[in-house]
Each structure stands twice: as C-alpha cells, then as structure tokens.
Amino acid sequence: MYFNRLKELSTNPQLVARLKFLVRDVLDLRANNWVPRREEVKAKTINEIHSEAEKTLGLRPGATLSIRNARAPPGAQGNLGPGGYPINRPGTGGMMPGMPGARKMPGMPGMDNDIWEVPRSRMPRGAQQPLIGKSPSLNTRLLPQGSNVSMSGRSSALLQGSGGPPVRPSGYVSGMEPVSQVPVPVKLSPTSTVLPVAEKPQVPAARSNPEELKRKTVSLLEEYFSVRILDEALQCIEELKSPAFYPEVVEKAISLGLDKSPPRVEPVAQLLEHLFAKKVFTASDLATGCLNFASQLEDLAMDLPKAPANFGEIISKLVLTGAMDFKLVNEILQKVTDDLYEKDLFAAIMKAISSSPTGQGVLDSQAPDVEACKNLFQ
Image (cartoon, rainbow, N blue to C red):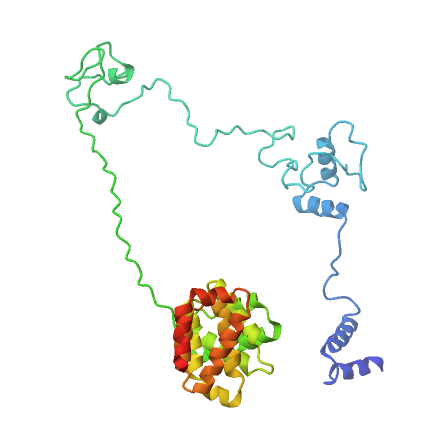
C-alpha cells in the first residue's frame, strides 16, 4: 500500500522535481532487492590502498611493507604506524610504488639482482666526448692568399705565432706611434638660431558697460554713506577699473550726498579729499565732475533750495586742501545760469573759506582770481 502511494506521488505533477527523484530512487532500490546500483564511494585506508596495489602489480602480500621497511633509516624500524608501515621517515618520497621517490619493484627496469637501483651515468647536456688522436682542423679560407702553411698535424704559425718580427707600417718611426692616415670627420655643433619672437599685439581692455558702471557707482556710494569707511570706498572705486569714469563718480557723489536728508556735505567732502590725497582722483577728475554738476544745479535747486549753498561748502573744502583754485571756481560759477543760485554758491564758498584758520592765506595768495569771481556779479 505504501509503495503504491509512492508510485502515485512519483507521477504527481504538483510535486517538486527533487522529491519525485527521491521517491523514484526508493522504488528502484526496492525493485533491485535493496542493492544499490552504484557502489558507495568512501575513503580507503592505507592498508586497502596497498593491498589493491599489490593485486594490480601481481606482488605477494606484504611486499610493499618489506620494501618500505628496507628504505627506512637505521633505528626507524620501530616507528611504525597502523598496519605496520613506518611513519615520519625523512626522504621517503611517495607512498605508492612507482611514484616519485619510491623504490622500484623487483623485475622492473633499472634493478639489479639484489633488488637495488642501478645508477645511470649521464653526460651533461651539450658535452661531447673527447676525440683521441685527431688534430684540430682549420678552415683554409680564413687564411690570407699565398700563405704556404701546412695544415696537417700542426697548427698554423698564424695561430701559434711565428718567430719573425711583426710587420710595421711604411710610415712607422721608432719610438713614435704610427700616425693615422684616415681623416677624422669633424662634427660641427649645430648653431642654434634664435628666431625673433613676435610680440603679441596688446588687446585693449574691454570697456565696461556705462550702465553697469553707474549701477556699481550708486551702490558703492550708498554703502559709503551708510558706513562712512573711506578705505572701503576707495577699494570699491578702484575695482571699477575705469579711470575715465571717475569724473562721473565725482558728480554722482555730490548729487547723491546733497539729495540725502539731511544733506551729506561733510561725508562727500571727506571722500573727495581722501581720493585726491591717495591719488585715485586727479585734479582734472574733480574739476570735470564739479563742472558737470554745476551745469545741472539749476534743475536740482528747484527741488532742493539749499543745494547751491551745500555745493559751495564742498567746493570751499576742496579749495582749502589745494585740490582746486579760484580759477576753477570762476568756471564753475559761469556754468550756473541763474544769477540767484550763482550768488548763493559764491557766498557759501567765501563764507566757508573765511571761517577757516588757513582761509585768509588762501584768499590772499589767489587775490586776482578771487577778484575776477566777484566781478561776475557787477
């Protein structure tokens, strides 16, 4: 009943293939009277291996044991392992007959009657046996033409050396070395020709966009009016890398400073004085910037009535520091078209200079130019 159930399982398609084969193996084993089809493979002992070797080679039982005992060194016979075979013997080589290092069996090639190996003498590779009674031969084609040298039994005089003196060259002088007649070619060192390096044409610096410069100028001036750090403002102006734009920086500084509430008269004057002292701005930059602002003063004064007076204070400080003189003041006054604004501007300049300790000296040194400015209002 059980085996019928196993037969049904072996044909069941829902059963895993591995289980199907296991069931079939059980059925086949029962059909073969429980005798496996293949002999079970397992490890063999050393005694079984030697017994099989003796049967294969046709030796008497125990022959391998006697051979191995004979090869053992004196005093090592007592050190035997299981089955009577010696163990831990140095230099025994292989364990099986016929393996490298094992002793050969009786009747095998290379054995004498006492069952000892016969050493074979071998010639070194490439060595030749000496030829007895045979004189060395020379190739006559290697000798000069016309030489009557006997080649039988004796070596040539060219090889052993003749008794005659060596032949000297025709130009030989005693005590001197022969002079070589072959001309030695003179190796001329190549002269390195230095070619003139063509200088690259200098590419003019690309001009910055005017709108971009104006935007940067307004930004740095606004920052200066907030923090009032002169060195930082100087660095920002130098980073513009556009000296031609400096007059517009002067004009924009005055315009933004006076448009503040309250007007930044003192910060603007300090900034212009600092940049002039550091030689960032030139007198021409200051003059051009102030002239441009003066031409727009009338429009600005309509919204900022105090702009002419504040502008006059800035000019007075530049005059006191030597950045301007009254000749330039005369030109600035002429740029203002409105007489009222012109008078307010000049009055603010004279008041600020007169109130300064060094102002009187400046007025005296430039008296003709000061008088020319006064004549504009007559």
